[in-house]
Figure 1 (cartoon, rainbow, N blue to C red):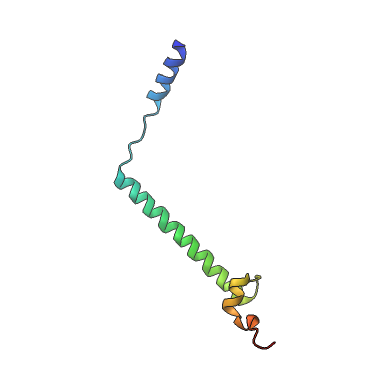
Figure 2 (cartoon, rainbow, N blue to C red; figure 1 turned 60 degrees about the horizontal axis):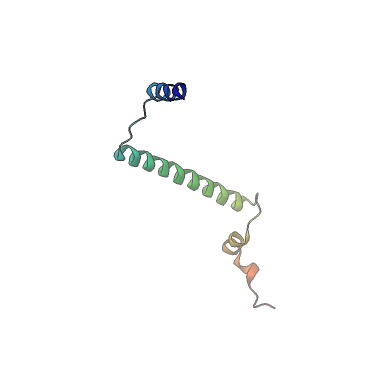
Length: 76
């Protein structure tokens, strides 16, 4: 048991825990959120371009937004 305690203490001394302040965390979180929203916007823009070009199949919502006449039941 003594060897295990010494090993744990030695391991703890080798890698000190990094101290992260609240300001550092908030800065990292803002950067992460900005990067995520930029990726999401890029994917959305690419999807809109692909739909306009007709290279991808639209889901129901996209079809309703781009071609609402398909859902017009007044003709029948």
